[in-house]
Amino acid sequence: MSEIGVLPFGWVLASAPTAPPVPELDDSHDEARLLAPIGLDVLERSGTAVFTTLCIAPTKARLETPTVKKPMLTRSRCAGIGTLGLEDMVESYLRWSLAESATIIAEIRRRQITGVLDGCSKITSSV
Image (cartoon, rainbow, N blue to C red; front, side, top):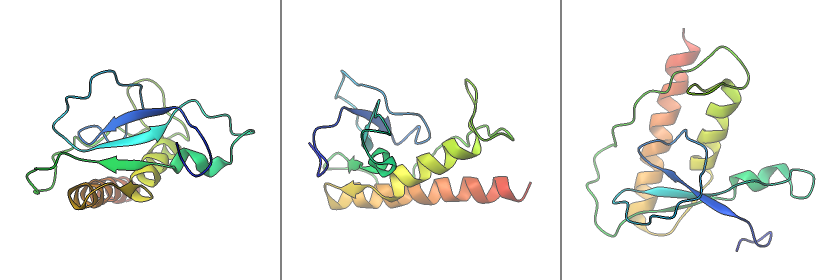
């Protein structure tokens, strides 16, 4: 449930922050994750509903910056299978940067992931 009503949500794991949200049946992950809406109709909901996200994390975590593999970016607006385009990268960044956090550990992890994604986009834009 969100402030704009009932939304179907999926998970985005901190180890793969640029992945699209997927329905997750297994809740046994020991890492931070983002709850993000999936399958939204843009005409029915506002375009910003995609960024109605919540970061959750375990109650105990190591606070060093997570190791995230730099995504393979293409020189296109949208990506194909296994790559990211500019829109995909920006959408991932906004999902993480605009997320609310359930705990202080989740907030720390959310900021770390946002920093990693921001660093990836800076490296890409200089190429």
